[in-house]
Each structure stands twice: as C-alpha cells, then as structure tokens.
Length: 325
Image (cartoon, rainbow, N blue to C red; front, top):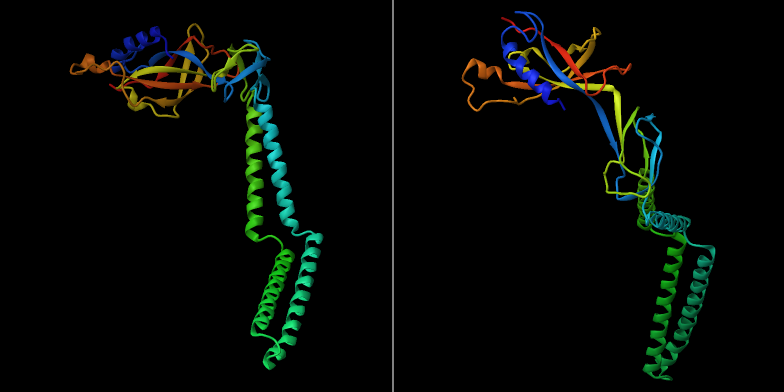
C-alpha cells in the first residue's frame, strides 16, 4: 500500500499535472511517486491442525517444492485407514461380481435341478397310474386330485430350479456390475480426498521467494486458512501511484513506464497492471479547476527486478506521459 507521504506527494503533484507537470516544465515529463511493495504469499493448512515441524526461518530463501512446515490432525490417520479399508472391500466385491458364480454354486444348482426333475417325473408317473383307476372308479376322485396337485407342484419346483440354474450360469446382472464398479470409484475418490488432506498438511513452497514472516511454532494449533509462513517475492516488486484525470487518458493497461529510485540514475521498466475505475480524494462538488485537479486515480505498476535492487518500502518516481497543453 502506498505510504501517506506518497499520497501527499501525489496530491501535491495533481494540480501541476493538470498544467505542465510535477517536477517538470510545460510540456515536459510528468512524474508520480509511489512506495514499492512486493508480492506476498501466505501459506497455511486448509483445516485446523497442529504444527509438528517448522523448517524455515525468517530471511530463508526458498524455491518451489521446498518443505516449509508439517502439520497433523488427531483423527487423520484413522480416517485414512478407514478409507483404505473401504476401498479394499469395494474392490473385492467388484472382483467377485465380475467373476460371476463359483463352480460349486453352479454344481449345486445343477444337482437341485436333477432332484426336482426326478421328483416331477415320479409325480407324473403316479398320476399316470392313478388316472385309469379313477376312470374305472377303483379310486376316489379325491385321490386323483391329490396326485394331480402333486404333479403340478413338483413340475413347478422343477421349472423354478431350472431358472435358478440359468441365472447362476449367467452370473450377476449388468446393473449389479455397474453398481459395484461405481462403489469402487466412490471409495477411491474418498481415499484420494483423505490423501490430499494429508498432503495439504505438509506445506510446500510454490514460488521462489524469501520467508518474510514465520507465523507458527511447533505445537501451535492454526485455524483453517491461517497463515503459517509468509513468502515474499523480491523479484516481483510493484508500486501504486496516483495520477490526475488529465493524465489518465494517456495510460492503458500493459503500457511500459520508466521509473527511478531517489539518488539512482538507473531506469527501471515497469508495466501498468491495473488502473482504478473510481477516483479517490474526490470532493463532493467539483466545480472549480483546482478541485477538478484533485481527482486522482490509482495505477498499479509492476516491475521485473531479478537483481532485487527495488526493495520494498523505498519510494520510486515513475515517469508519466506529458500532459498536452
């Protein structure tokens, strides 16, 4: 954020920007002063956790992939084991369904079919012998009805046994196989989520930078999203300057501007990253020319500084396009 002194200097320049320039003659180069900042990244656990190791100190240089700190939660190991067990059970069930019926199950179904067929044949034979006797009146009609019912019942059991054998040989239905496969995918996703949580508790640097703040110590419990380590990126400094409404039309996102440090003749190239869409320090009624000159717009300028000479906190003067007269 630009310091108060930077704002005061920018305000002082604004009326002059409407005419010639701040620290420049008529038609000469206009300037604006901002305070250098650097991009900072806060690294912390994604859920409440306790720090067990913090491996970096303030001022350490880190690179992507470096381990910064390790956190744990009390129930995470049990949850990981539970998810792994569920995944194993789902895979076993899916393999069983895919393999279909076991040979012993098929053999048993075939045996039951043979037994049911034999019983149905015996009942049919009994009915065949009793039917002529009933026609001659040697046996009662009730005895014939019993034989007929037995023949129908045994025939039904034979047909049912044959259907069971067909289903056993065919194996599980397609829908059951799909359900078993879906169960495996669900269990695998749950296990992956637990593993991701475990991995997230090991804080890894994602950028090149310097540890600007160590916010946790071993044994300390942090809330979800709370910063444990703050990484600064000295190679990505930026400054926010304020320009008047008269200079604003000459600026566009992506434009390159030149800048200098106090007492330094080196010119640094900066790129306009953003331009405010709303004026600041705006009076309620801007009627006079002086009041209109007080309309200021924030402009963020990013610099590439691999030599790291642009240090955060230093004032920097940015050259602006001249205001036409």
